[in-house]
Amino acid sequence: MLNDNILFIDGEAIVVDKPAGLPVDPPRDGSMSVANQLQSLAFGFKRWPHPVHRLDRDTSGCLLLARHPKAHGRFTQAFEAGSVGKIYLAVLDGVPDAESGLVDMALSKTSTRETGWRMVADPKGKAARSAWRVLQTVDGRALVEFRPETGRTHQIRVHAASGIGVPIIGDPVYGKGDRPMLLHAASLTVPRDNKPPIEARAPLPPTFAALGFADPTVPLPVAAINPGPSPAGS
Image (cartoon, rainbow, N blue to C red; front, top):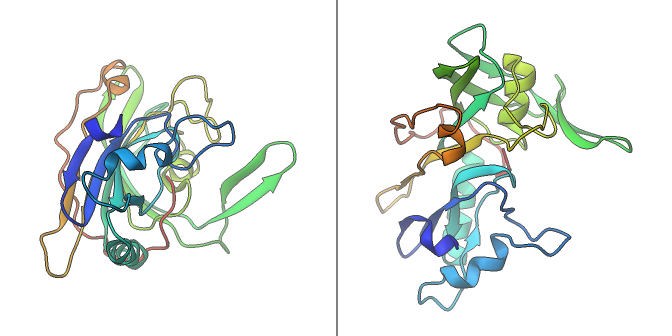
């Protein structure tokens, strides 16, 4: 239950550690989702909290919920302005040629009857930037820290596969999809005008440790430098 996964809570916000495999919105098959558990996260409030952004079903980690509509509006504006700091950790199915870099690769959505929809590199698409660095290497795989400066759908997944040239292990769309995807929203910082910022860290899931990767000390990110787009999944 998500009420056992609280990373931050006050009168405006809740940050939960979303497990991998749990979608944010109700799936068509009617299975469990974050939306199904919002009532259990009310904690005495009459209104249920609501997600401010999205994480993909297979992405774990920090998910921000707003506890009332005014807070939801302010937090949404912070995401749209690019002032939210985000750090993700991913295990890549190989080791990049460089130790660090910046992927500046615009993205757009494409769809075919055979393969469904996906995001692709497109110079005419929406701007997308992700700073990255290798933290650990084990058995020919790399644990990589991503600091997205924008928030496009599937941004980190496409930037790993097409920008760095090494997909995230288990990615069902941009990689082999032969095991659970290892992408984790490790920390989140949301600035607020008249209150201390929302700050949360989510511990590395056991699936990462199973491949030999230790939980690194992940800092709380500062606000992104460049303006970002509307909230989306990664």
